[in-house]
Image (cartoon, rainbow, N blue to C red; front, top):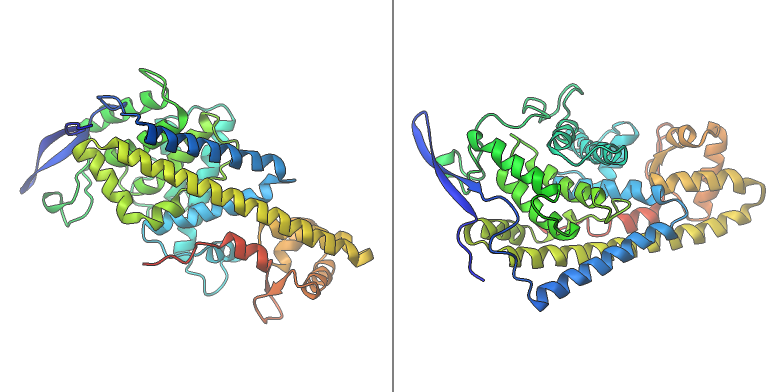
Length: 392
């Protein structure tokens, strides 16, 4: 199906330069999406995989243990797309106590992504609607508003932009893409919020997530952090519409692996109205990501169950060792001090338990220091870190 430009260009004149900015048409697309049998099959497959992933929630004795790491994995990948150089291990070490050698500012930015997602989900669970106000709140957490700084602290955290932005190039006149001017922003955002609330007509949650993500990225309502908020919007909207009980789906890995295609498809939607190819890509991302997440969760469960069985054979030491083992499932990199704090065990008991777990080959010490030693639940961390090494 051929469509016209999905919006309109408006002329903008600033001091010394005139350029054109793009104003997207409100959603849903017109004419309507051409649901060919192939496209429908892709979305059916995506829904099946999402259902399987959601079912994993019921298999896990404590979903929060896996969720902690999955949310952080998504945070790392989403931040990688924006050029942040921080690994999952960096983030976990930073959260321990800003361990020496960790790229602190990058890790802090990834940590704020975690905080932004957790804030948004908590608000939704408390009955607050998915709305422009919530997106501003999420943006404020993401950019460190009210926390004393960060690279985004001077970029109006929690506020929609009041000046022109552009993507690529050194100025709007030579940019690859120029989002709507400020005087068009309110209308664009009003229509996006209405679409999220199923106005003027209901849209199935997964399709809505795919369409709204593109629209948000096109509007680019903030001075900074638009890419990350746009990806957070997917998780928040799926949660708001009840499609995922827990945010176990991490699409940013797939987007990072296919980054050039991802950006090209966003542009093809704007310029040629090619929503169908974008929807195919999005459905494929969901299928691959959900299947990988479900597989990882099941392998983590199998590993933890087997290790728990081995720990049970320690006799009198088994109870405290089991408590340390459970804490390590939530934070696979930890210090003795952090484990004592999370379990309530004494430092001496923690150290004895770590020694037992080391003898069983479950825990490995990453440092050789007398104080501040860092321990890893090595095989658990390896499963979580799969796919982290991506080609440039």
